[in-house]
Image 1 (cartoon, rainbow, N blue to C red):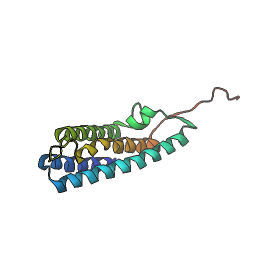
Image 2: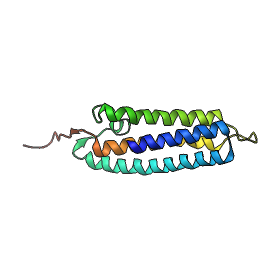
Image 3: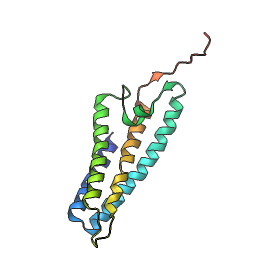
Length: 146
């Protein structure tokens, strides 16, 4: 959870500064942060999926529980900050990309558009938390003879 909040704060700070100043070095830093969080999110997503598949053999693991922390999988003290971080990632990524949609020379597209990839980080860390710490119902086998 702390990695998610820290990563989100760094992303928001670098992206907002880059969108306001629109300087070359600020845009480069924001792009590097966005790509770093995106690739970290891919790793977290794959790791969480692998662990969730292992748990699904004995427990009822749903995708919505895993990546959106819905239901009783996570306590409110975890769910709220994790989903808030995901929301911030979506909003900052979208607003900074739309707000500075053109490069300084007027051509379409800037490095700030990479911010729309950052929510993969939030989804990956949500999944990682839920795959390792989430509480799921036990799977029942209707064909088992007792």
